[in-house]
Structures are given as structure tokens and as C-alpha cells.
Length: 431
Image 1 (cartoon, rainbow, N blue to C red):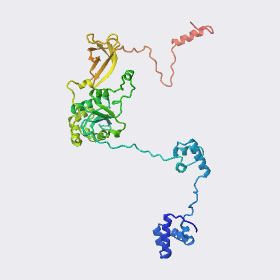
Image 2 (cartoon, helix red, strand yellow):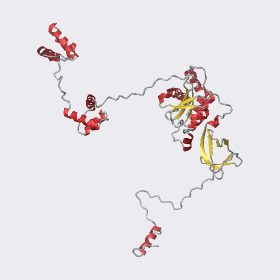
Image 3 (cartoon, helix red, strand yellow):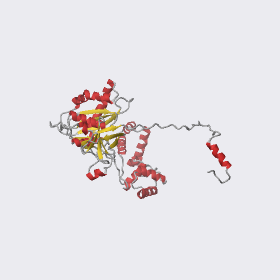
Image 4 (cartoon, rainbow, N blue to C red):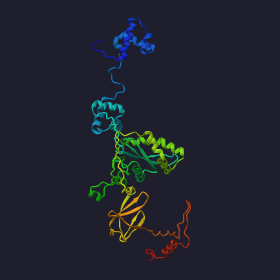
């Protein structure tokens, strides 16, 4: 055969072995073992090699179109339709739409066609690059805070939430538990941290509505250039704590990994003690469980300086961790708040005028304070009269069992109206 002959590696290996059979006396039984062929197949291949030379070892279908290949006209029509109508479709969805038009194609076949024609490129899903963040250098420089909903008391009990705070520099942890991740448990946890270590410089939280307000700013906030704040964020603003919100769980991985420590060790501790309520769990946390975790897992910061600030002696934390609402004074110097009415005393100085706004602050212990121009008002709650009991109608509706009918009595008003109508002349109705 003239010209060049393309052979695969397998075919070249056969040629080498068959040359040894022809020149060195290698037996076919040994050749078939080397090539991994049966004796009959080895014998047929060697016979073709003797008759045709190297060309006898080349596959007969090489260079020929596949028996399962699609017609060239179909390929051209499918690619043309894709370019006109389906240019932003992926191969899988495009193959389904082409099938609806009568072109039955496998998505891999279409993918190869599109790649060869330059009509589609592979779009690999790449994860966002995340670089490892070094710990902060100082204690109290950044504290991560997050809630962990979990079946803390076992699968047979409802979920509870562990509000967890972890110092970024040292891994020091402090936690409290409640039935749900609420503003109150977040405030109480931060309050406990401040009493234990001081006021941190910044908190790293997620974007839940406990920490970040989802509402739009009011008109007054827009005029003042202020952002809407949650009660927790207002307390942090008064304390000078910056709130930094994370956009992914991986960003606050320190506290997320610390959740796993609690979900392993604390769950088992609660089970051993037979504890099934958050109040009992908080007693365990306060009485040494958090201290034991810190002694085992916390590490020393890179710098010795502590960035926590002391709480001033003139500051009462109970006045900072509050819920605030605005109410307007009525003409009788009363206001309504959470289904209760409060009477403002006349001896308050300054005294708000009717329709003026006052600030109602509710502490975590449910104590209510009414503030006007930064002064606490004297007030007294008013006992609201109880509503009258609803009277049961004398003629209750009769419930008719299914499948039964009730006929009106002979003196029923409906029968009397019908009798009057029959007694009137045609076309006239009784007045």
C-alpha cells in the first residue's frame, strides 16, 4: 500500500508480536496471551497480516462514517435552528426543544456539534474564591455572634436555639439558650458577655432580622439620614459596638465550627443530666460548662492588649437593652401600648401636650418607662373595663344531620307569608 498508514498503539503492538511469530518462531498460543486475544481471533489477525501486511491490522471501519451518525442535512438544520432560536440554551435543554421539532438528538451529540461549530462553550460552575482570614490580634477586637437551632434535648423534644458568642482572636465562647432565636436572647447573651469581659469593639453577625432591620426607613429617618435599626442594633449603637454583617456562613466560620462543639458535647451533657428546658440548660452553661470549653479550646491572642471597654458606673445596662416604640398622647393624657392604657400624671415637668409623641421603653424584665424630652414620665396603668360577654341568640340555628330534611312548623313565618301572597290578587304584593 502506497502512502502513509495510521495505526493505533494496539495495532502497533500486534504488529510487533506478529513479527516475532514470523521471524523468531514465537507460537500463536504465546502471542494470544501477550495480546489478550482468544486463539481464534489471534489466528485470524495473523492470517490477515500475512496476506495484507500492515494494512491487515488496521480496523476496517477507520475513516468511514459511523452507522449511527445523523444525516448531514439534519445536522445543518438543527444547528441553524439553534443559532436562530436557542442561542442561549444549554445542550440538554436545546436537545429537548429540538426533539419537539422532530429532530431526535442525544444531548451529547448536540454538545459535540455545538462545540465544533463554535456556537456554545463549556460553562463550568466555579465556586467563589475564599481566602483564609487571619484571626484578629486582640481580645475583644471582633466577636462573632450567631444562633444555633438544634434538637438540644433530643429528637423527641422541640428545637431550641443556642445563642453563641465567640471571640475571633482567642476562640473564647459564651452562650445562652432559649426556645427561639429572638431579640431578647441576643440581648441577654451580649449583656452577659459585657458583664464578664467588657464591651467589645465589633460584632460579626448574619443578616437575620434580629441584627439587621428588613424594613424601609421612615420619612423622619430619611430626613435625618439614618438607617432603620433593630432594638438590638440600637443597644449596640448606644454602647459604641459596630455590627458587621456576613454574607455567608463561611465568613463567620469561627462561630459556625464552635456550634459543632456544643452540638456534640453540650447535647451529651444535657442528656446525662436529664435536662429538657432552656432555663436548666442556662444554669449548666453559667455554672462552668462554658468555662470548661474555654479552658480546653481557647488560645492566647497574638497581642496582649485587651480591646474590651469597661462599662461606666453611671450606665445601667437595663436601660440600654430595651424595646422602644413611639406613641402619641391622647387628649386625656393617656396612651395605649400593648393592650394596656397608661395615665400620664399632671405633675410631670415637662408635660407633653395632647397629640405629642412620647417614647415607650420596655426592659427585658417587662418594666415600662415613658420618656418625653429625655425625661422619664410619672404614670400609672389604668384598669380597662372587661368586655361584656357575648349573648347567645335565643333562636339557635338547628343543625340538620346529613341525609335528612326539616319541614317548617304550621305557624312558621314563612308559611304565613306564603298564605298572604296567595290571598292577594295577581300582580299585587302585600304592603
